[in-house]
Image (cartoon, one colour):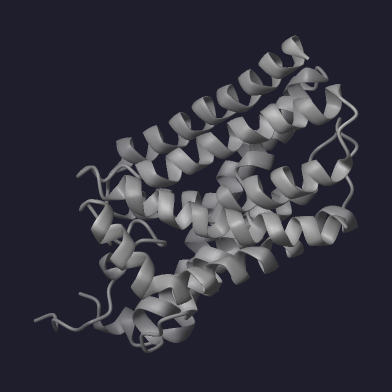
Length: 170
Length: 123
């Protein structure tokens, strides 16, 4: 018989940032939310600044001509996806709950480190330069590698941090 | 100068994404990740507009560092987009995951390229 507290895949939320939090009320609910969570927003902000700086740093280290494969954005998004997969297993299933950990590392640092807007602008620039095949390889390759990286991150973290999970699972 | 602008933009963009995500997710009941979809499309549009404005005018390069690299980079996210898609697949919601991928890419690229073309045509 499966135990109720057994860590399972379904314990991970779909949305890793809000994870099901809802705030459907009016302005007063938002102002009380901001009043009680301003410190969490600051942690997100600090993480976003650091993650963005790291992303800028990768761009400086791996310059892009505007016509070939945009390796910098590709590397950032794939490595950031892998890291978020690992982090979510640790935060949800392994580490005790902490007020700032997920906001700072997940929403802030990794959200700031990865980017969807540059992914789209790189693709637009490649298409504008007539590099259609490179654009297709970049868009498809980033998507595929990014999803596989998240999946490997989740699976690897479960394997290492939850060694009993495989035996317990029925 | 560039580093300061990236830090500042990132410090603004990340909480803005969190609040937008929370706002959008509180207003629908479907499993489709509309919150992340919204920030990614809006951020792609703003980046396209900004990149065109900087390319077409004599705007200083720090504008792109602040609004593009910092703000739009932190407002949008690939890691959350990827995580949500993988979780939808794990839950067996293959069509929703597929719709998220195709929708985010088509609408995001359309917003970015459309915003760029519009600004380039006007300036």
